[in-house]
Amino acid sequence: GQQLNQSPQSMFIQEGEDVSMNCTSSSIFNTWLWYKQDPGEGPVLLIALYKAGELTSNGRLTAQFGITRKDSFLNISASIPSDVGIYFCAAPDPFGNQFYFGTGTSLTVIP
Amino acid sequence: DVKVTQSSRYLVKRTGEKVFLECVQDMDHENMFWYRQDPGLGLRLIYFSYDVKMKEKGDIPEGYSVSREKKERFSLILESASTNQTSMYLCASSLVRNTEAFFGQGTRLTVV
Image (cartoon, rainbow over all chains, first blue to last red):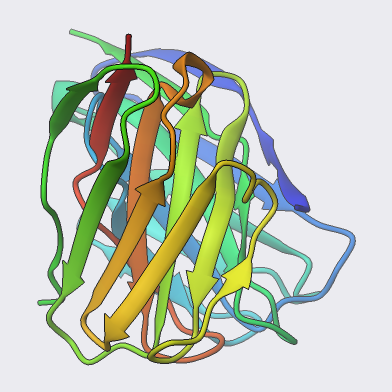
């Protein structure tokens, strides 16, 4: 199935730094989702976005639904060691029941 | 909170065995999905179901079948397990089209 283009693939940052990652697509979506997955666990939903231009926060996480509806961004402020994991974006197919997923961003936080 | 529960966290099965992976969701969601996740390949859709007794093939259905007899339960069946089916299996559910998906905790299956 189609995959979303997610970047960067991996990040190594110092504790306390801010993090940014993004997802792009050639297709328009009505919903953008961001998940975090810890090793050996299932993905956990962080933020759901439903409207172009929408900016939504969840604690230190902020995500935006791009105005073109073809992209989304996730920012993590003041990173801490427990932010370590793989973050990936997802978007439901507007015309079907399936989901498209980004390839994931692996985040390492150095204390 | 939505809860999606997979019956096993870890399974070890022998080649040729019939394997059942069970998934239950507690939020009356219409859609349920089975994915497998492998390093470098991301999440790949095996099957999904949008209603009781309804199923649709995903990207990699070969070697798998599914059953949805009740709305809350979606089972993945490996008819004759093979070593190339060693993987992390993830179940997910969503209310309707264009809404978020919620995942179970995953089942790490090893076929020996």
